[in-house]
Image 1 (cartoon, helix red, strand yellow):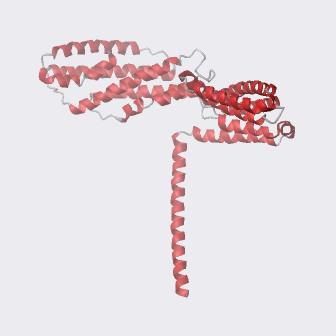
Image 2: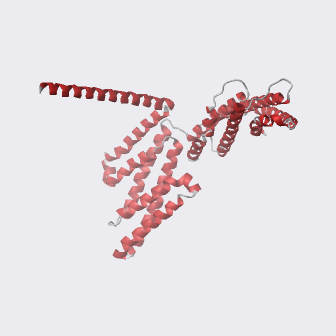
Image 3: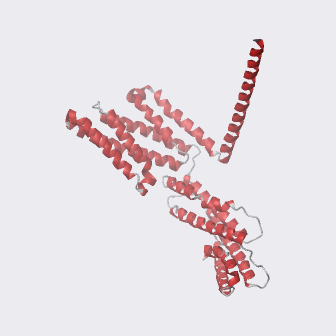
Length: 386
């Protein structure tokens, strides 16, 4: 018996040791992941603290007896609004807050009208009419969410409008105080929105417009680097093209959030935000052409023998890529510092002259049937600047 107990105790101790080792390993991985997430963007830590502060402010309404006595359990909507509305950037927070405010206001007006119609329809018709109106409102507002322009700016508001209309309609079904319910819901949500706006703007604000600006500058710098070394012997980071090409969704998100932001810092109301997406599209198109050129450069071997037309084509392409790189780098630096690009025009003019010389050389190679495929390998770079 003692041997059995001893063996069981040994197995239990071994199992406990394995469990402790697994827990320690999980804890170490979690700590490393937390450090990486915070190190990648320290603003994430700041945002987490801001959300905690805002939740505390919203929760204080439960302890303010005059407020709680007036609103009772409706004060919960202040807390819910803060948790839902307070986003990472100021633009995202303002966009969600205004959407929620507008949706609640529209739903409140609709629910008052629906309650009035249901009341005059009699006791029997009241629930039937309410059900019909809830169905119509949910169906129509859901269909509106498929409209591209409405989906981009007001998708969240349309969803909240459906939720608010349905909840207030059901809440007022057995009550004659539906207007009071709607007003309390509207006012408590407004308090939550004010808390969210104040927290987002006052405490270490994160501006989506600034992120969009920085992202485009970074992509232009990467593009300039790629152009500079495209036809050289230097080793370049081919991941640059993938990073630039895959930045479209991120740029569009920043642009959608930026439209809600007020003027701030270097970005006044007249700042040409609408050109940013066009600039991003052009940058991605250039990066794609460079990726194609890199693939073809790895496939074909271009003859660099002195005096040959093909060698001169490659040398001209190298000059063109360097001049284009200088032009884009100058523009990115000017964009970064918000100054006028003084030397960009010079590099663009030199790039055009080089491009014209390259086109003349390419025409001279028409009779070189054996080298046509080799010449085609250099065309993507020409297409970028022509």
